[in-house]
Image (tube, rainbow, N blue to C red):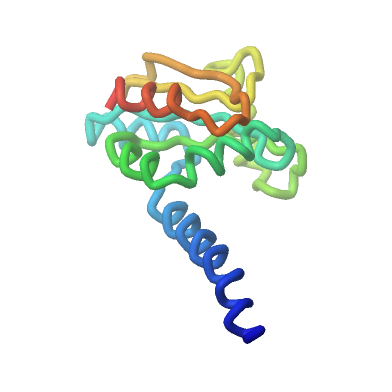
Length: 151
């Protein structure tokens, strides 16, 4: 009886974590601006540029859970090239060259240092639209509409 109860209580959590992991693998986040823009030009796709503070920004962490870990985002993301710019406080999370690259992106696309920040760029790097911040209430409709309007 205890085994059955354990399975009933734990199995849904295992399934959800596996689903999130599968979605994360489905996403193809790039981390190099120049390579991303080259790929965007070749494929004639807009770029989703995402600035995050993965280890310190609470709204960023919630946005990952509420938006980026969902199948609807994964489906929409196929219409874009994804560029992930992380500015962690723990410098051990990224290589020195990646930290430099990411910090070099701040004065170009995130002058105010806002996190999270989602921008849509055309294949030439021009900003088409953006949404900053996240209220952490689970409402990601604005984010999804931003993507739907620029796919």
